Length: 192
Image 1 (cartoon, one colour):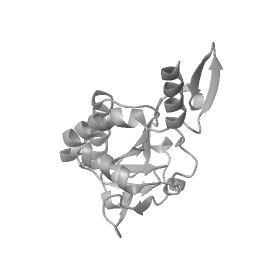
Image 2 (tube, rainbow, N blue to C red; image 1 turned 180 degrees about the vertical axis):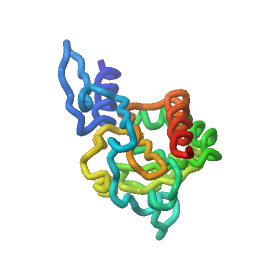
Image 3 (cartoon, rainbow, N blue to C red; image 1 turned 90 degrees about the horizontal axis):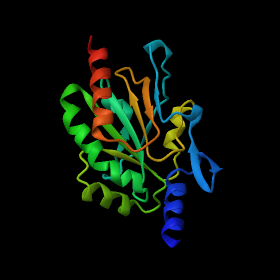
């Protein structure tokens, strides 16, 4: 029984802000339209984001921004060291990062709801994450998304095309096999 309560608490913690619906004694988390993978196509239908920038997680006094990756496909990953699914997907994201960085694909993490920066930094070091993250415990950096895209589910991964328009949103933990083909397709589309 205690294990069930702990599992439920972990799920609620990682998905805070989503609608939870009781279903036969269990909880089911409902995303917008019931989808966990959302694709915006054709490019004219894709939304844009505002200026997304914030303090770099690992370097005091440095600001990290999506604009640091002009002309590149950008993967934005919302994560927290407290989130079990974020821990599970960290190696897969690093694998996809390594496999696509030579294709002009950049990754940018956004660490949310972690009041202790040192714990988030330890997560990056322990998981050998090679891409930067913005430290955003209050989730204020996400205001740049303008409420047009779901950001209340953690982890969430947004893929921006080379013009930094949202091309895909994943409201779930990812495997490299889920993400890498999408990145390769978007990078190839935009390079033509």
